[in-house]
Image (cartoon, rainbow, N blue to C red; front, side, top):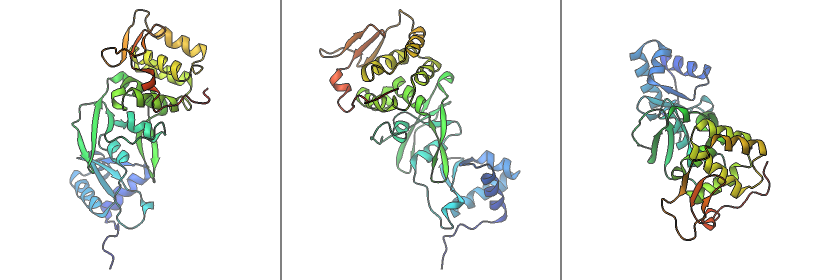
Length: 280
């Protein structure tokens, strides 16, 4: 006798059909109440849909919709990227996790970082640590919906992933892993996209690191127009640091082209990365 079928009562069917019509991959408790027009009915419908396997809890009041095409049996969603993205109303999977999903690295991070527009405490989702990074309004942009087995989740776009990782090397494995990510990313992100995204991000130090890293990894990557645009954003007096706070004997040192103190050994940057064979 089958007891694990995903049946639907009247209110549950209304909510599932409403979500399907909107092609929603995520629903909040507030949205469910709006769709059914009654908060109590929505709470009951959500509770039953969780029990029957039509919804899966990502966090309090945030649920992943498990598609009808998954069949009549109750199956849980184990894609941590989908659950992490759904765990906040405004957010996207970013940095190292996004680089992994875009194929910029073979590494799978132990911690998923989600960009948000507000303070959110860290969580464990299916035993996976998820950390939330509140971004300044000027930096909170550049995500896309990535498909995953019949639903989608929010992740930073390829160009935003590149810039976010350069902006926060500590969230993508450090300078050596960042070099690997940049090596792969410049093969799919155009120079103009990289430069315009860095400028929109609004950080001079990030733009300095971008210029230095692509010059080191792919010297012909920046077109004259893109190089000029990037340089025009960086004040002549701007100085910043990439790497450790203090310089060591074999570090690259000061790079005058970009006003950057590089406290990293070049051999460390290329310990796991190879220069791309061809770039734009």
